[in-house]
Amino acid sequence: MSDPIDEPSPRASVPQLLGEIADVGADRLRGGFSRPVFSAAETDLRAWFVEHAERRGLDVEVDRNGIIWAWWNPAGGPLEHAVVTGSHLDSVPGGGAFDGPLGVASALAAVGQLQALGVRPHWPLGIAVFPEEEGSRFGIACLGSRLLTGDLDPGKAAGLRDADGVTFAEAAARHGLDPARLGRDQKALRRIGAFVELHIEQGRGLVDLRQPVAVGISILSHGRWRLTATGEGNHAGTTLMGDRHDPMVAAGAIVGAVRDIARSKPDARATVGRLVPVPGGTNVIASRVDLWLDARHPDDAVTAALVAAIGDRAAAIAAEEGCTVTLLEESVSPTVKFDLRLRDRLSAALPAAPLLATGAGHDAGVLAAEVPTGMLFVRNPTGVSHSPSEHVEDSDAEAGADALASVLGNLLGLTGDIGHRAEAAASGDT
Image (spheres, rainbow, N blue to C red):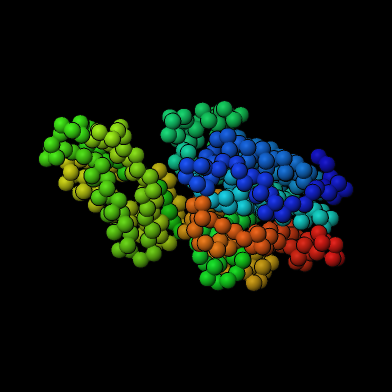
């Protein structure tokens, strides 16, 4: 490994880094980007990250769960008690340019800032890139971090299928992983002393507060469930309306009921974002309709009650149409409160940054059960995410990288405002 101090890596800003991948996975049909895990687009992004990590003299490895780790360890000690940052590179279908890649690009930029100062931290600094954070291909969000922590049974993960029937085990094997070795990785977890994830804010908190960066305090309880309405498939032209057992009609009414039930519970959010009829022909009465439910609330008990109420109402709606319905839990994450001591460290390094909760799930939330974790959020002027309208101004992206550099420097035991010092070093104003 080349020494990043004796042979400095080229410094690139976050906008420059994101500009390099601006066309990768562009979705001409939906708009935005579609970068499902192990797709050509996501694989290209993983290669892009590895190239930039190696330019900065980092040691890169891919673990048995498909997580990429890039290590800066100039002191040469063991990989223990490391400060780790990072995010993900996959996206929802037709997602924005910043959800995930902003955190990865900011991590690269922050490491570049620290290296430009000529510092040699006593503890290792790592960047992690997690696969299938969005769950857009195999249906379970934060799949990589769930496997790492043992929160997801590896056998269940291996058997997950995408829309084309490809299992996660098959996709993983095609990308050099051994499906038999998926699962909890205690050795990898022991290396992490603290994990800080930077992410675009997926809401309007910072817009309303007129601040570029916030420190995260918690993640709402959330989960995904699959509702399956089953009826009788038949011919659309020969089956009289009174003779039908149409699960599509039941599904439509269930979607409306989800909205109404969620509105009845303060602070609840419930969404049906995906609906798949079987067999899906225009002139065919469906035999089955699958609906995927996303439900969230700050109180875990309220989330459970919300889903139970939706299940009961869905069963009644299906019965009215002569159909049946089943409710299957796919993944559930309880409300996460980030480590208080780490949060106070972040706030001390960033005294102007407000504290914000989020309704969006993140790998940091999964890791919180195992290691001290925290988050930084960067302002999104549209307040919109999981959409092409998601946005970060260049100046805010740079403010986020500066904030991350300051936080990482603080956690590594370096003194002073590292972000501002790195900015001054880069401009020659030292």
